[in-house]
Image (tube, rainbow, N blue to C red; front, top):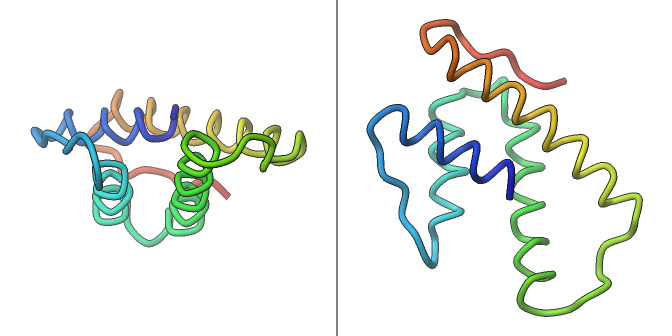
Amino acid sequence: NAMLLSGRAVMFSEGYRPATGEGGHVAVVEFLRIRLGSSFSPILDLMDRMRRQRHRITYDAVGTVSATQIAEALKTAEDFVAKIETLLAHPHKPPTPTP
């Protein structure tokens, strides 16, 4: 959720209004792919997998994610949000990808 909300913040900062409802989260990921460029592909691929897993957890089954996966997702989200905060604070500076 933190990564999705950060992505929405980037969209809002550039005058776009992300869709809500079905397809809205996919639109955020695709917008970020265009806006952030190929250097962010690995983290955006991970974000997209996490988005799909989030959907399954929320709507389908409980207990499908291990404690290790949760810890890794939290670290990834923290790193990503920090990069987005930097981007929004300095919009004219190119974003730095997360390794």
